[in-house]
Length: 367
Ligand SMILES: O=C(O)CCC(=O)C1=CC=C[C@@H](O)[C@@H]1C(=O)O
Ligand SMILES: [Mg+2]
Image 1 (cartoon, helix red, strand yellow):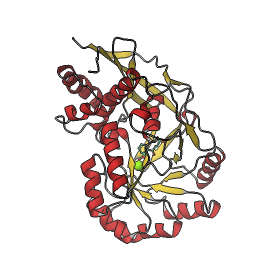
Image 2 (cartoon, protein in one colour):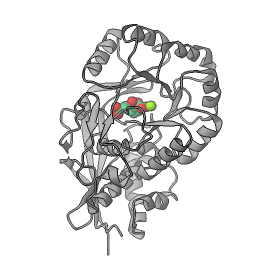
Image 3 (cartoon, protein in one colour):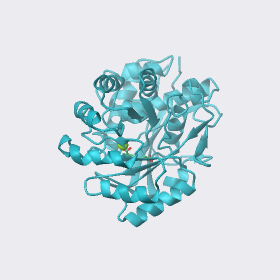
């Protein structure tokens, strides 16, 4: 049994060094929770919630996360102790949706489990890599000049793949200009659901741009239209928002809706489901990579551990701490050298957490 004695929720607020703009808005101040799960023997497992303050990426928000964790998820865990973190996902199944809240709690339990075993989290997950290749996600910029300059800086820092945000009015022409300056750079585009099937002829122009893939061009909850689009496009489609579970991944594979899946731990309800999606994709010839939610150090550390699994074949959006924050909440911070992160070998997530944000909720477990 994993003997949980206490759970604390710390409310964090951190300002991104630069605003991050996508087809649905701009974010600079990030609110989130750090979940601490204590075993009473000096071990603390850490999780980070990734829902944003407003429901523009998925329907979850910082407030719904708190409500779910306090009123539903922790009471379930109190009722039913677990032997292994995989059981947490099954226990939470009776709560519909709310994957980001579930993932934050489950992630902390995975970390605690690994620390109690004195093993790095990536090993416990079955990861193999000692280093992971990383890419960078660049938000929409006011001018092409700023975009090109940001790309130049990213390439100088060694990032191995650049993801550019696009939206109607800032897409094909912009990408053409980018391609002229960077003809051979591995580039992909993310539309965050900004198009519909009516744009099919417009989207076909992507094929002349040699993109690695186009991420989530159509509706956030669609799998069927993406299959129609993929049949018309040579550029591989990568699904992000549409894949919230293994069941979704299976449907996408059956319909041919994508060739790549961006796995985000929060979007799919935790590490156990993320691993199942990874394993399914590996067996079915779908490549995966690890997406990001502008995480602070704890969430980033979880993403690094997940990225060590063998079918994470494209560099992920798991950039350096310093790309986002003046000061991260882990020590050492995540460092990228030549586009590579060294996976830490210490127990659990492998980084020291230095998080002094206030505890806004704490509960003890009996027994
Ligand atoms: O964490 C990162 O660096 C990736 C950021 C990123 O591209 C995204 C984060 C959150 C929502 C979206 O805008 C976007 C994505 O869709 O992947
Ligand atoms: Mg995306």
